Amino acid sequence: MPRIATVLLTLLLATTAFAETPSALISSLDGQALLITKDGKTPAAPLATLGPRTLLELRGGATMTVVFFESDSIEQYTGPALIGVGAKRGKVFHGPETARKVTAANSALVREIEPTALVHPEGSGKLSARRVNDKTEVSWTTDVAGPYQVSVVKPAQFGERQTQVWSKDVDTKQVVYDGPKLSDKLTYYVEVAAGENTIGVSPFRVSGGKAKGLTEAEAEAKRIKLEDPHNTTSHVLLSILYSQNGLNDKAVEALNEAIQAQPEEAAFESRMKTMMADVNKQAESNTAYARGYYQAVDQYWGTETYFDPDAWRWDGWDF
View 1 (cartoon, rainbow, N blue to C red):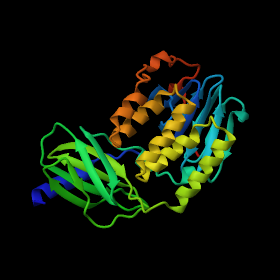
View 2: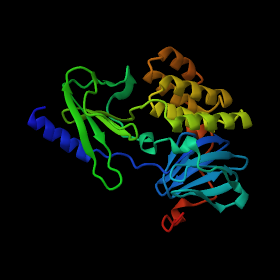
View 3: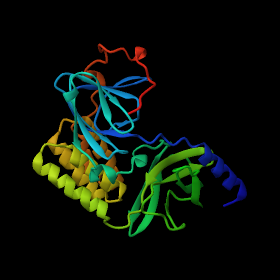
């Protein structure tokens, strides 16, 4: 790569704002709930990532399942209640203590998920990185003309700085990674740029085969399904786990089970469309997408509530 292009790409990577790693994820929701932060209120939905100091207001009759990545736990909340989301667990601020229930501790399903890969910045085009014949293939779509600069970045962690492990200039919209061997225990980011235009950034992992942790997660999901066939959490988490390990077909199958259990959930339909596109199954994508998840959130319910987030103290959360 020419020196000027190398300097430009290095500056671009240095200023890329990778999203904060979430502490929790809403895996299921039956009923109406609000997600409240210091920035405002939005309707809650499955697959929404949560950071510490988030409030969840559940309306009467609503039930929600939230997974916490640092504690590898799964909690279930029942409305009406106001729940505070911490780094490791939830806490009931308004409502009975029975509104919060820990349904699983040391969950393999939660432990094997890489939370960093759940959030990433969006570029001006669609970017995907997947395993094809034991090689990592990166492809993208964009109206921005090339040439393109493709790079793989190891995010900052455990006090280490973010580092670039590979880069390449190409004229096509597809490239096969041929850099140093990557660890199957880490999540990397691949970024594509055209000059000063960022085309896209996407997390990916190198699958080292069917690891023991994945087998344990599958066994746990099977147990949950036998205990409660209508539970969507096991399907959602298993779908995320398969996707992060490059097992896209299995990820689609797992998410489809969640859709069958809760066919009216718009968030599942949206996720299915994205996944189908990633594995070039547009026909199935149109079918899964056809149920019309384009409903405006205002059709569900308003955001007026008895609780005033402007008066809430957003500091001092030590749980």
